[in-house]
Length: 491
Image (cartoon, rainbow, N blue to C red):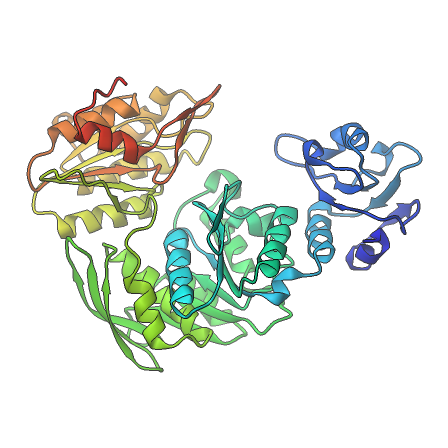
């Protein structure tokens, strides 16, 4: 494709060189540049792409998109733009000829519930006979092909390339998680959505956004973007931030919740050890759902999926079939069952709100005590650590504070900050600190008695633990299963 074909959409301040050259792709990481690529210089958090122009040229870059004109050596084709991230999004979508315009595309955003909602939507689409694609925290999938995950929402070139592959492989509908970082960093600027879903909003990513108000501003920006397609908003009306978005929405909106004013309403909710039963009322008709997923929060995730499906004309019978065939979601209230007399649950809960919801769900299905094992990630929002400590103490019978992904921080320091919140509620006899996560999980399981529930929170589906100098293999589900089978926690 000629470079000149991609340039009309850019806000070009200055350019130099032959713009009719053939280019082979778009790159933003100098290590991934291939011969004939356009290299877009991004100013990142830890590195500046302008510092790697020399490496990109050595690898075969034919043109450069920059914010700093003087960084480019003479003789190179160069394009000066005010914002290289916006340019990256535009170039990527145009290079792959706007592939999302040829898909039915659903975007799901919010603090909690994104992953589960996308899985439920995908299952419903499959029940309707559609070939599907899925992009999110756990997996990238197209049809039966599973691809490794880089980010919850990939960078624009990778994202548009995935859409292009989906189109070529005959995918009809794709559903994706949309992170606040992806919105703020313009990764999804040129995605043409058919449905946008808002699940909820609570404290998270304040290390990046600074305040929950700014976090909400970024999230709501997704619902303000102009779209080439007619887009439908599906919004949780029971969430105060959802109501704010709904009030200013200028497109067709489907509201869901337990509030009877919603368009998709759940009632007669019955939470059990085996799953969740509830009734759903819609303008199209009513449904009785027997969900294998547990917890009241999964009622909301189901309603989001139902609203999305109705927006796209999926029949009620396919909606019911799709929801009821989902057995579990990786790392989301996932049971580890080795035939023991107590429950073991692994969940990704890593915010105060998500931990509270998961613990509340455990209380609804447990006749015994709740033992909680959790930590907090390093190099992330520190203000949530005591809040999560307090939540765990409020709703657990016993707490073991341990490491999560400490990254560059000392695990003991993170644990001490969590302990501040635990001590507001719990006496020293109700909690302990065990830095080694494997040992902490083993201890919790050894303490459990018939009818109890052990909740292992924070890492969910993750298969590694991140330290300052290394990443080690670690899967809460595997470690729990080993402990349940009596395998030594030192192996």
